[in-house]
Length: 323
Ligand SMILES: [Zn+2]
Image (cartoon, rainbow, N blue to C red; front, top):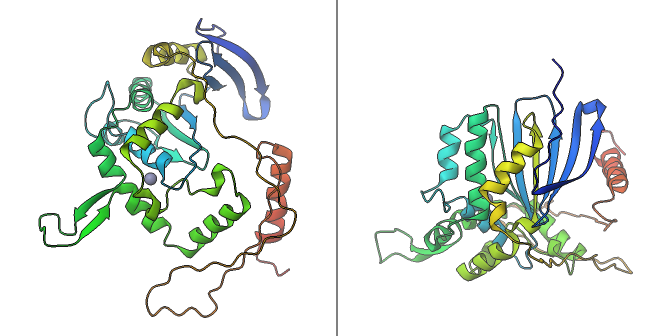
């Protein structure tokens, strides 16, 4: 059966362009929410596995992990779902084929997929509410970010220690020498932009993050004017628009958001840096020196240059033949 082309447009949105990709058997449609400027990319395909994500541009200018702690805390309850952990409840109960949330160096995204329409609608409601009307309770911040606790919680004679989901997660992640290497390389290649910092959070800096910092970051970044929605599947775009509008967008006006997006400073000569990394006691350090060489290339949105860079690195490094 041929897919029915549904060209209706919701009045709150305008269509910017559409483009057929035959090899993928889908149509890319791009929309803009008139009032807030929110973008929506819809990949219309004859597939009943429908996918949704909402992404926000997040540009932390320190290593407190504010974007990462926010990603965790946003999922701990919202205006319409003021329960503990609606996200984890839905992971267990829903028919989803994918549910997650990601913090990257300059964006945070909340994706899910489902093959059941009712389930898709439920998840959409939970996701939109978590992102745009999150409760951000101070106790959830303490749970997900950081808090001081007695080493044995019921024994006040034991030492005070830092705990927190993100704090512990990053302590584990940053204990690997290769993670420290990557972070150090980035901090020198990018002296002035958001990529200088560890968006996941450095454990020593996570403890400096305050609840007020979290709220400020949320207000500034989690707004439709700073959001991109993307969907894939056989639900027509205008049905998504109807839901986006009802669930969140109608309650917002345009916000002029100024994010520190600028080109990185260029170097005029090679920079050489030596740095140490932690080892466990008694660990043998012979032959454990890492040497990395990095170059700052062009813009990440130059797809041609990006592909060439990936190809060159694959040719040079990603095979076991001696060279
Ligand atoms: Zn995490």
